[in-house]
Image 1 (cartoon, rainbow, N blue to C red):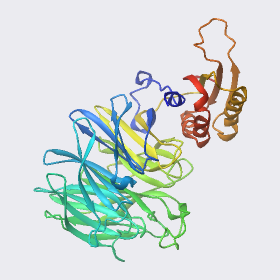
Image 2: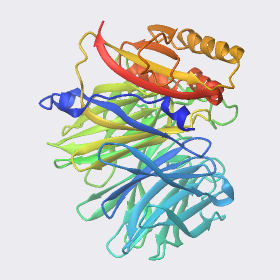
Image 3: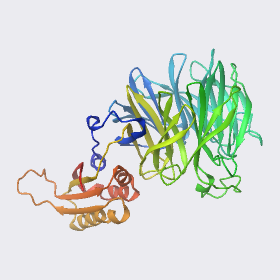
Image 4: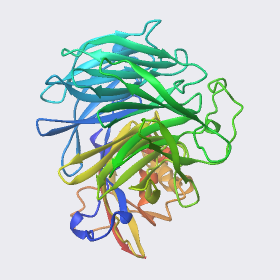
Length: 507
């Protein structure tokens, strides 16, 4: 496994080479590290700081992978945690402190349950509670969780999908157990059929909750009371002109100055091919966009601004929107996309205008698995994919964009094959590497050769492959491309050792 991982090693320029005087308009995600996961894929990612240590929880089908994250953005695996029935996938994970104890709450989607884990001092997990679905609680196909802290108690709000649509609240006891408080069944008025995104605002002593309805194509606002009950305030649905809410998916928000905003993305139903999954197939497609809503004094949502997708942005199939940072009355947002397979950075100003910044083509589809995390003055994004062949998560640092000028990237792979590898196996491996150029168009040039050095310093490495990419996107797409993953899995067993180095050079 160690040899397989080395295949993916890449070198990122140190921060000392970045011009720190650049504005936020020049921000860009740069990959710092990536690691394998034991689950079949990555559906949800969350993170948490405990006693000065930073932990990442990546949930997929069957279980949760646990990593530590350092200030350089390096991930270190520290353990795994099985889910109830080894089912899952883990969805809507959220970590929080309740009465002095740190908990991780997990929506076990196909287990129809909410699992509560205590976060131990080393970041590992210990299950303390399992809350099963009932006829009253709308936990079937549980997807999204949101902790709401009131003055005297904390509550866990839960949204589901498909069979039992609705919204529920549970009081969180000091031991992590959940007590049902209130549920509201979905109807033709509210948008709670498939709550895949939730967010809370606290405004002048009042608490408001905002939900996106994936199946019923809209957003709803609710007032939350001290006892955990709630009532609907207003609802806004999709239309055929200036709304982009078909398949409302991620929901987040931010306060800028005296203004409160809710930001909603969508993965339009046109992107779903599974027959019968979309309840209302009579939808209208007029593009993709991220919607900004302003919150009025009553807590209601008011349509405010839409950032429309175009040839310069990557907004098709938005599945997660994270607030990266807030300062100087502006916020930096990261939009993870499943269909564009990218992370798009945007700026939201105090007036509620959303402006696209830079994007990075990650090379893998992001399916709810995107999380922002801050360590000291550094902002990171951790991303994963629902792809069953990938089984990896990656950490990115959001930094001022590096001016590459006319430089290209050389990716050098030096390797040797095991002694027991046959000549036919080696020839097949070389041919498979050569064929990557035909499978991955981002590889602008590929050449290879057998070592002919006479200096005796080759460390036994026999073959060198040199790949050229025009930009950061090309390397990302190559690293996580299905063809590259398949190559590594195929020839990995006959690789004896490998050394990978990358460098930027003039064309």
